[in-house]
Structure formats: C-alpha cells, structure tokens
Image (cartoon, rainbow, N blue to C red):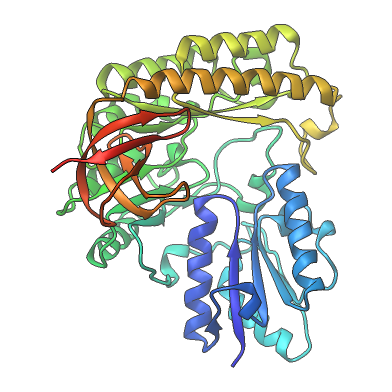
Length: 425
C-alpha cells in the first residue's frame, strides 16, 4: 500500500485544497500517513506569497528529498517561480490541477513525471464539486471563490489563482450545512479576496452571508480578508449583516500603506480616506469590532514622509492587529523591476511599526480584563491550556472547556496577541 502525506502551508485556502487532495487520494485507494516519516510520498502544498516563504518551501522540499521521500509539489510555487523547484521531485501540480493528485502519483509509480500547471484560462475546475476529507475539529474552511479582480504591482499570487471565479451560493450553502451536520461550529469563508465575491455572477458577499446566517443552528462565521475598493460598493449592506450574532465581529481589511502615492504605485485602487471611511462605518454600527489590517513597509518609492503617513494612520485608526510585512520583490511582478529600498531602511521601518502595533494591541486588549465575553472553544492551544475565540475572534486561552462549546468567560489577563480567561459557571 502506497502511503501519502499532505503537508500544507500558507492561507486557509490552501488548507481547503489539501483536504480536497486527501479525499481524492483516499478514494483512489492510497493510505494517508499522519506524518512525513511514515509516508512514501509527501505532497508539499506550497505558499509563495513572500520571498522568505518561498525560500522556506525550497528548503523543505530539499530536506524531504534528501531524507529519501518522493515529493509532489502543488500550490502557488509552481505558478510563481517554477524554476526554483528541485528537479528531483516526482511531479508538479498547479492550483487548478489538484483533482489530478492521484494520477500524478500513479504516473510516478510507473516511473513517469506528470507536470500539470495550467492557468486559469485553460482549466477552471469548480473546487466545491470536489470531495473533502472530513476531520475532527471545530472550524471548517469553505472556499467561496478563487482569484481576484485586482492588479497589485507587487502580488504574484494572482499568477497562480487567476481572475475571479465565484462559486455558486447554493454550493457554498450546501457545504456549510454539511459541515454543521457533521459537528463543526465555526465556518471560515475563504478566498483571495472575499470582498469581490459574486461580482462575476450577479451577487455579493452580503447576500451570501444573509443566506448562511439564515441556516438553523448555533454556529459562528469568520469572514476572510476583503479589499477596501470592493466593499465600498455595498458597504451599508455588508455592515448590516454583521449585526447577526452568527457573524464574528472581525474585519480583516488590508490597507498596505498610509500614503496615497504609495497606494497608487502598489496598484491599490482606493485612498487612505476611503479605508478610514470603511473603518468608521463598521465601528459606528458593530460594537467591539476586531479590526485586522496588513501593511507592507519598504515598498519601492516609499519615502520617509510616506512611511510617516503610514505611522500616522496606524495611530489614528488603532487596529487590533497589524500584519507587518517587509516588501520583497516577487518574480514577474511590475514592482520587482523598480529601484529597491536599502535593506537596513526596510528593517528599521518594520521594527518601528512592529513596536507600535504591539503597544496599541496591548492597550486595546487590556480593556477586556475583568469583562465577561462569549467564547467558542476550539481545543488544545499552542500556548498551553484550551484555546478559544471570543465573539469578535480574539484568541483566548482558557482553564477548561470542551471543543465546540459556547461558554461565558471572565477575561483575567491580556497580552499584545492574546487573552487569558476563566470559564464561568
């Protein structure tokens, strides 16, 4: 019996793709190994969004090959930078070819090497029609679309995922219902950009959320990242649906820069003021909103003044969490051809922004100490104890609780990145 282990990296979208591949492999008669050590083949479902991530992927593939494993490479790396993939791998699949995972291993077993990295124009499979491997857990990822409608000058992910392909609402709802019937309590809606969901099929994210929240049962929905330029088109409608208790009061809204000129160079089709307008509208109507944003520092052309504008924006808006990234050029992107900033300056700016974001996050989280909050228990936490998520998706470590339970918790401690609390009653 050939044993296969699927090892996945990157976004929740990749996690869903991995579960689809596992289901296909199992139905084809392959034995799924829990660890790479117990496998004949290791499928490395890669991420290539940043240069450091790509280097880690390359190192991991080499490590597995040197350990005698036969490796299949999938995910974004085959699209973004195929030349760096070790020639010793046994097969390569693009993100639109994951339905061929059993075939690529069958070919490898016969001594061949299948390489299938079709683009979105040539191969547009509907992944919600593929099977999924059901696992024990509280959270279930439901992809709602693939690709996006943006043309950011720094992004290589669009080379892999292509333009927007929204999945039919009835298929999304069917998967949500199936997950709830199997005991999952949290639905994570995933996409490269949930904000443009449905634009290609005559609907939008707010309408999809209306259908999902109408499903009977006690569960929570976490909405994935959405870009500002798209949700401006249906902002009031979206904010209204966030009033439903089934939707986490969590907004992942990447701004990337606090300077309009840098945003233009990035190809981001919104202004700083429009970003702030969205935040104001959400905070006015959604109490205790957990605002997450992304910022890239050191983008080509980012002057000292532009960076200071970003710092000023952070001080005004005070997000609960900021994902700070140092700009790294990605192959094939427009920005990679521009003059790059000195590495020392990028590191300096990154450190300053990192210190600021931790200070703000701590001040916000400290206000939760002593309060009673509703928490969905997830299970054993990485930091010890039992992990859960508050009503607005803040991570909290508990002293007790069974996975899937909704419990009232008294917050007893706060740090910059998570809370601690005691279950009441």
